[in-house]
Image (cartoon, rainbow, N blue to C red; front, side, top):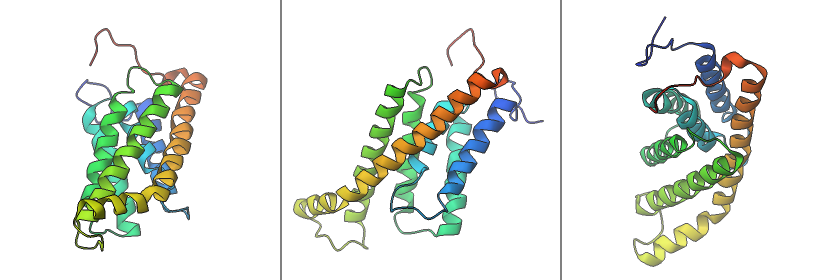
Length: 186
């Protein structure tokens, strides 16, 4: 079996459940949904918060995103979307020590805001945008993106509640899924 850098089995029950939840969330992206109401932001936060090491936290959610994009299609802004996704994984690291509802909500809000800022800036700066390359054009691009921001925030909040709440319930129900107690911070 594969081992991670801590000598723990890569496919231990906890890691297996986390991977299964990430893949299930990624698959939901392929179902019909309102524009930007997807599990992607929550998936990134969840990966950052729960995968036992940072390499897994970045790689497994990013791979699931790329597989979904191979089905739905790639676009000119994909590198900016992926960069924003990685920022959300990093925001998830902040949740590692304390996954309270308030902190998860704050992380979902931060993730939605940074995605809105990055994706709309990328759209404005790209050749596919009809917005003038002026401060006014950038402002118009952000204003036009506000309805999609609310969908992103709603999707991130909904799926974060499902993923983090689902994992908390699984940990309570099945003690083998609980995070191991370590003697030192990692």
